[in-house]
Amino acid sequence: MMKKQAEQTEKKKQNGFKTFHLNEVNYKTLFTLKYTQRKPYQESDPKKITAFIPGKIKKVFVKKGQRVKEGDRMLVLEAMKMNNNIFAPMQGTIKEVYVTPGISVAKDALLVEFK
Image (cartoon, rainbow, N blue to C red; front, side):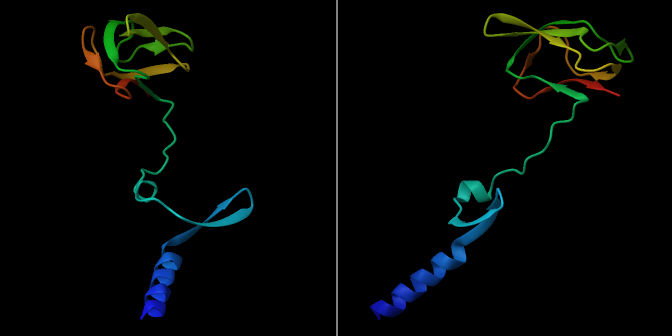
């Protein structure tokens, strides 16, 4: 009886093992539930400017349809009693501005979008 239980336990362990490939080496391991349920990585869209920290919008310097050059100041985000200038990462036209002065934003909130 004990031998049968040990075999079943070993079989469950083998079924739970996953193989992943890293740096040209295959590894066999057990993954945690948190790891298996994680969100897949998504590369950020450079045309969407998001808040890097929660805060309050102090000033907005751009509007929909406006052409900006790389490095132009777009808005000021106050966080932790500091004013953080958000600059245009590229040259382009503003598709939409999603914030107004005085509103609070969460981390990763969409602030401005380029065409």
